[in-house]
Length: 388
Image 1 (cartoon, rainbow, N blue to C red):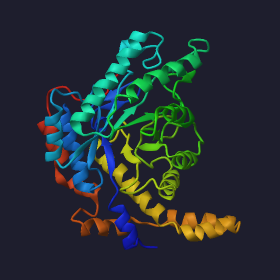
Image 2: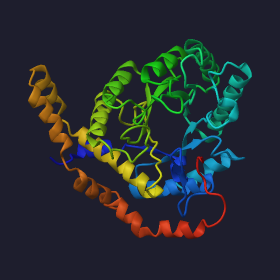
Image 3: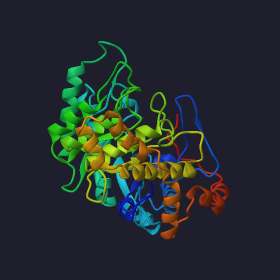
Image 4: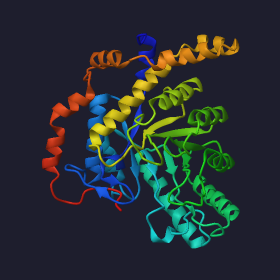
């Protein structure tokens, strides 16, 4: 099975946003590892993200994380990104690295702490106005570690009130996307642990409030593609954070743990109208682990998303529907598996070359000398990272 011109035309519209923090140092709860050439500034992060786009043609925007990427002049930062062929994308808030948020941020019992967290989001919205960003993404570490530690229902009420204040501040062309996470750092209960809680909160806000689905934020064995299908059916899937995990929130290269799961997710995205230039669903990586080199790791991830998107587009949907309607269990499964097992890499390599890109972006980057150049140029200073 080869990739048709129709499928290639659909792939040409694909855009996958890169996270600025993926280019900084990262690690586990026990150690953050440094690497030569790690960016020291947001400008250097943008330059690295531009290198990924240069080699793949897949990553035309970069997400910011505030305060990690805070600068004095966001107009200048937007111009800098534009000069590197990128747009500034999602603005991510941070209410999990301040002592005041030890017992919660938007859900805290102290109104002053809640207001501090709300004001931080107001600052993020101001940055969105300056950068042209569409999405404000909120992930909360809020929760409790012990039964009885907090009022579970009261925390939901306070969260709803805080989110409503933030939602009222976003612009007409902006969106609030609320991420969820099964656990960590709160272990007894997390205030936004699953898609249903996120959906309930954003549904109460309005049509420009949606759910962000991080593919690593679920209990083992969770049928993520069902969640994708349900949120698309409800019109509330706003964005993806693509990564891969074996046990918890590993933030590994996309598709590393379960390529078939990635295929199944992308099939439901396509089937549900979540793919293409008119789709409201934003694709973003949140792949930022601690052992691989940052730039080639991002290249590998965006290529994995592209390859699985191509395979998902190859599914013979009319034949699949006929088999499903006829109760042909093995026939229906076989149609999906035929598409999944198709090796699309040769066709994609030829297609990239026809568009002036390297057929093998990983090899092209390795041969470019960029890694050695930044290792030499970025000696000294303080490397960026989320720190621990």
